Image (cartoon, rainbow, N blue to C red; front, side):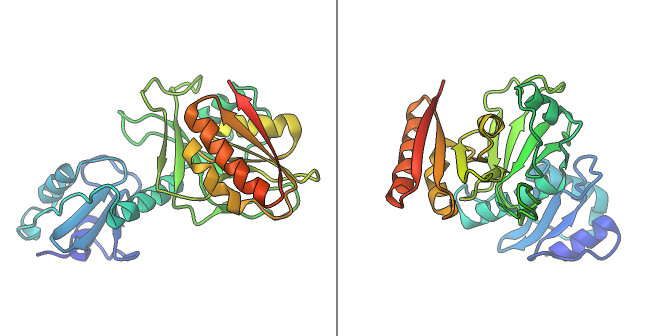
Length: 282
């Protein structure tokens, strides 16, 4: 059985350094200007995963077409089961790769999307623009679930160790979200927030499900702003709220999941003595 290292080196024509047992190389199954194919050795064969979305069988067929008899009689390892540790590892790896492919949000359709919603404040480095890698992909606004430095008061630095991201799929002109069933999705599980604005002297923080609502609240009040990404993730953020925060405003969507997430977050914060206000969103 040919090792992942050998296949990787034959694909690029030179040595490839491994990261955690994985080799990142350009995917031969699509036009790939930046490495998007992860190769590693599994118990049952060569494991391949294209972050741009190519199917494993198509990747393996492309490898054979390119290398011919240079590799042995390989067998593609099955895709990991959703919820397994291997699936989680791949999702985090994919999220990190997606984040590495982002462009600064300024001047892109992702900025246009936010400006079209009346969001005129400065946009943080936790947001970016993700161009489509394939014709069937949508452009997207990408956001990092991560801890963020504050190099000076009122200024957010770059997110650290990004392994989970939130995507808002957009129309090609940035006028609205893409016309798909689920235009918002997350890659890689995380208990961290999307940090959008630091607290000001008022020592207040707004927490919402969505990026747009959090930025709108920051624009109108000046308080810090976090987005959870989904209602079910809101309660997990309670333990991450800094002890110096005196008041938290929770922006709740007017549905069962939104109200439940806001309530559970509020209960935990209230128990530790933080002033909490829940505001409903239509």
